[in-house]
Length: 338
Image 1 (cartoon, rainbow, N blue to C red):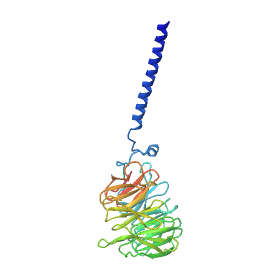
Image 2 (image 1 turned 90 degrees about the horizontal axis):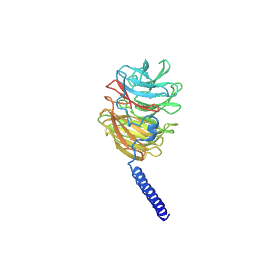
Image 3 (image 1 turned 180 degrees about the vertical axis):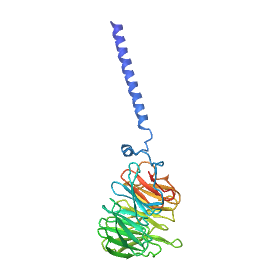
Image 4 (image 1 turned 90 degrees about the vertical axis):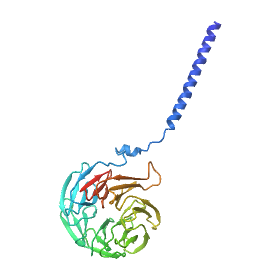
């Protein structure tokens, strides 16, 4: 009996020791697993089946020399300088659904019902009904026009002056001088919810280095702020204005409330077009056939800035359709879906 009791005690001791060893091993295994390096993939991107940084393989042929691009909530619209036309593109597969003649459509914007296109040669802007391509009007702005933005009621035009047109009927509500010349109109314009921002692009021999902030109600100039050389396209991220500086190869971030410079970021060669996707600004680098993605927040997963190859000469157009960023490639006659 005594031997059996000792044997039972020994078995219990071995069992307890085995259990303790197992727990220790599990603890080390858990610690090792917990200390694995964090993934660089944003789980929200995985959830939307867009876990890659950018799609660098998908391009759709448009022909001509595509520049301006805008999303109307259902379709993308491409302005084509090479064919003097605009085309409707289905985002899911890049199919061209319709093409309509429109003069010199370098930049496009959408007012919730109709499309607007710059017409540099005609010193005007063109209003187009998207359902059938009917031109609803051509409205003079006094010089070459190269930038457009909609403020919810009016269309603002970057020309040698900044021109305010009523979207409903194209009536001219004001023309505001910010120092540009007839031959060198403002090539960038943005709306921050209260004010208009316009670039003072300058000339090739004397590039500008400032942007001007105007009150959207009165057109009064609220301030002029220094950025890089030859500022062109601009975008608003909900708090800040981002300016592409064509000659500097940089983008400047400005505080929208007071114009304070918050940062200057290197991108590619000859940056021009710029767009916002809700988390990043995307900059088309027309001289290096690339697009740079710059996260607006200083914190986040992965590098803050990344550059991706696109087609040849992405000179102006950047648009976001809610899922993908689109870039027009002028010399390639294509659009890239990133």
